[in-house]
Length: 318
Image (tube, rainbow, N blue to C red; front, side):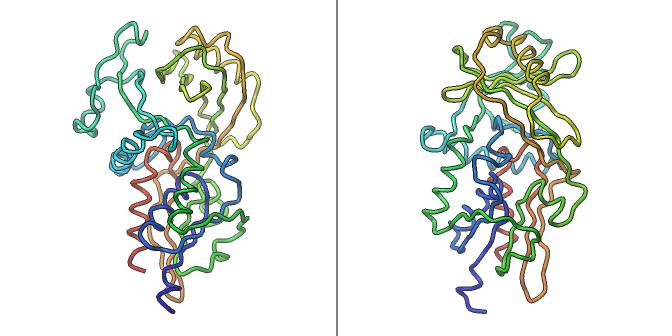
């Protein structure tokens, strides 16, 4: 096998995990192709509200390490928000106190404090300044950065990972890994969002109501993303009007201005949840290598760069 051939990598999956992994590999000198079933704007990642915070991901200790590494990158990218889609935005993490984060942020997050009653009406909330990522800008930016490093994205439906014939294959298929690996432990947790015109809200908020319903309000350029839901093992990608009404109602209880905002769009995404992220190297016949990087739940954006660098290390010895 020539050295030229050994440099080839196929990344299967074109969401934020796949694209970020491809960027890291390409910028380390690999010849990278991304195979994606869906165009960027139709991936699960495109639906994400995309606040940096570990959510629905295990093992939490490893995830926090990946998240903090990703935070380093997002803070740098936030210097060019119009280009990268990343901004540092203040807001309230409801039902969370400063003492609940200190064990893992280790002073890494500046300005953490208890939210005031005016900022959050619940018993306890955490005021924080966190990366908020506009995926409609960030995903194309990742694709362009990959292209600048010599990589390319190809829309291609894969029915088996064996179709990828490169010396190194990286499996970033998310929920698709359920069939492609196959790995029945990967399952969907459905999230529904309502996108509305922004009536002038500049801070984000995440909370739960007394019945355990999720509410979050994320201000993105030109719009406000309202959520959400967390429905276990639900496969429907069709928005439910009754669920949408409930989302708006919960968010309006937190931010009354939301109540009359004009609805722009309804979105549904299926989070690829697993008991633990699978990030490991699997030797294949003939000296080829398969690196798995999937099962990130609702935290794909949060851990993308940390996981990408680890996946690249696993691929490096090939």
